[in-house]
Amino acid sequence: MADLTSNLAGIKSPNPFWVASGPPANTAYQAHRAFEAGWGGLVWKTIGDPTPNVASRYSGLTIGSRRMAGFNNIELISDRSPEANFRELAEVKRRWPDRPVIASLMVDTRERWHEFVNRAIDTGVDGIELNFGCPHGMCERGMGSVVGQDPAAIETITSWALEAASVPVLVKLTPNVTDIVVAARSVRRAGAQAISLINTVRSITNVNLDTFTPEPDVGGKSSHGGYAGPAVKPIALQMVHACAADPEVGLPLSGVGGVATWRDAAEFLALGAANVQVCTAIMHHGFGIVEHLIDGLSAYLDSKGFASLRDLEGRAVPNVTDWSRLDLNAKRVARIDHDTCIHCNLCYVACEDGAYQCIDLVDPAPHGLPPARVADRPVPLVREADCVGCNLCSIVCPVDGCIEMVPIETDRSALSWEQYQTGLAAGTISQIPPQP
Image (cartoon, rainbow, N blue to C red; front, side, top):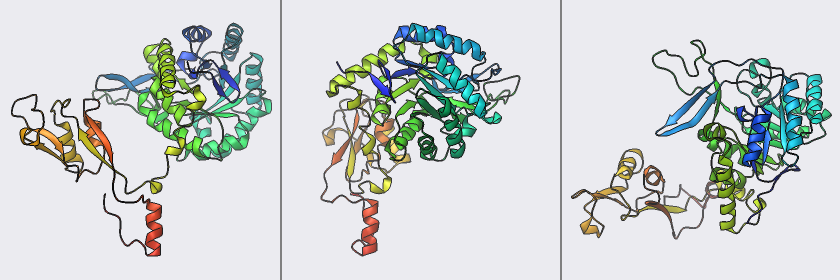
């Protein structure tokens, strides 16, 4: 069985699954429940000066039958006193000495950062996470994402925390920036030990078309909030990769944003994360999901012959490159498995109206194809010579594996856009190469 032990900047945990800072990590009671269920670590809900919250606080985006595909919140940091939070942090560390507990902090002045870092360390926590990501409420007060959007402020405030810290310091970054690498480099310059990313995305999920107030409704008004859940995973993956691939960042990464299954976690790890943090999926399904996360990731590692997480970490990083380095002459085409096709013809409609018109509806008999499930109904057939390999048909197909994208050998040598531009300048290439 593969070793699931993770190591983030020297903070070791029995598995890579941490409870992220948020409502599931608000009290000692919840921390005990999380560790009893099997979570590897926990980042406490952000501690600062007690902040009153509003009612209501959450809204969700439902896509088809999937509820909470996206999740919006306008909840702020802990509304409990620092005294209560630090007391319970110490209680949790006494009971669970082998599980890393991280204190998430957010205050304003240098003196307050020193005070809160020292108070957190006195509880026995394994690390400090600086919350530079909250996109609502706190940023209007000069904290949260307003810090994460300013590299100079990131560097300054991180250095304040490091002046008092004797445990690893993680910086949690906001995705609400033009280039996450710029922010991440400032974390490295400040001397922090790791980066957590991403925090939530600034958003409005929906509008009530009777009251014309977005959700969540607070006395007939609403506010932009922080977007999380499965819908933000692609954004988080891109930003994790960008930081993992940049040699000037060079820090361990904790991946956050839309992790709900072991596959999600494996993708974050493959793109450079050392562990993952989970919040929205716990709010949806409870702490018990960690069993499925552990079992699924363990089985996957075993199936690949990987001995530990280290064999997976960063494995996909070199396979993401700039568009200008992709091979213009690589060719893939769509092939339909007519034995599993249900003849809904969504592939034909998508290709005909939204793509490149290379799927025909044909009488199956003359083409040697199985008859349609509905008598006399035509079946879709790809004209491979005209297929540009865009993938749209395989994406819209409701039957898993029915449409496969198959690489095709050609007599063309690999040619990137960079190489094409060089050849154009040298006169060895005179025009854009045609589609293979």
